[in-house]
Length: 169
Image 1: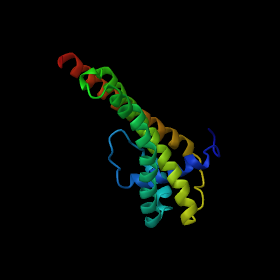
Image 2: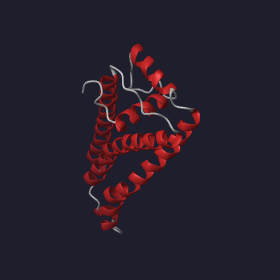
Image 3: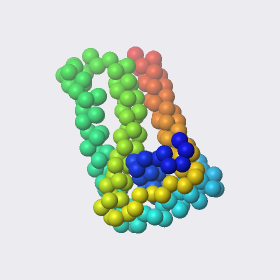
Image 4: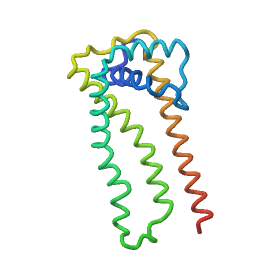
């Protein structure tokens, strides 16, 4: 994507991701060059403390609103189907459902962060983030980092599930 191709939702995500990183700079799996850190700092400086506080609340609310029905559909519904005989629930189903939730959680979280960002920007009167050269590459890097961390999480849950299934018989 050349400059100008980040839509409002992606620019909103980038803005609040940058602001959120002020608290979590040393998060494993999310490394940035000094130039990227400077750009993230510039982006983050546009978000007022009150806008950030409102964003945290709105993003959490949207995420919970998205997550609860999915958890119900993916895990609770099928388990209730097998209730009261909990031994009838196949272990691969539980591991698969947990893996699916691990995959969907970051997707839901990024959507919640972006939508909350757009909402807060409009509510607090913040102008849309002005994209500069390198923002598309930065957005892609962040997206690939999220995918990598999620993939490692799913692999970890799958491995733990396999070990539990093999040795828990």
